[in-house]
Image (cartoon, rainbow, N blue to C red):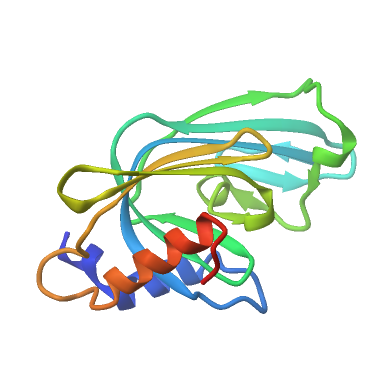
Length: 185
């Protein structure tokens, strides 16, 4: 568990999901209370642990959900919100192979993708709302809703754990809140 509160570990984990030409501006340890990710993928097939591109494949709607508390790293780049679990977790997956969605909402895969990697990176322009409230012991409750219906209920702790492994937590938390609420980084 102490490795969770390590800034170098956080940068490495978030780095796996940061798009090319983007840089992590701020990242912290946070607590996810509820997660619901929706993805619509076209020309693909479902495999045991992910989706693979297939020209003859159909459209698959994936709903990835978790309704229990777990540790995540939360970061922002110039254009993206990035979230990755600190430890391996289980999710509830629901699939719909006959979706009622418009063509604009369908993402075509260029390469296979694991279910675990879906819902880790979101364009900030796709954020519909971000509600911030004060929480217990100096924490901040953050409820993020995306335009596609995905949402995250998060707690951003006041401190970055014991032992000083996340020395920039306070400034990074402020930068993330500022970026999510539209007041810049």
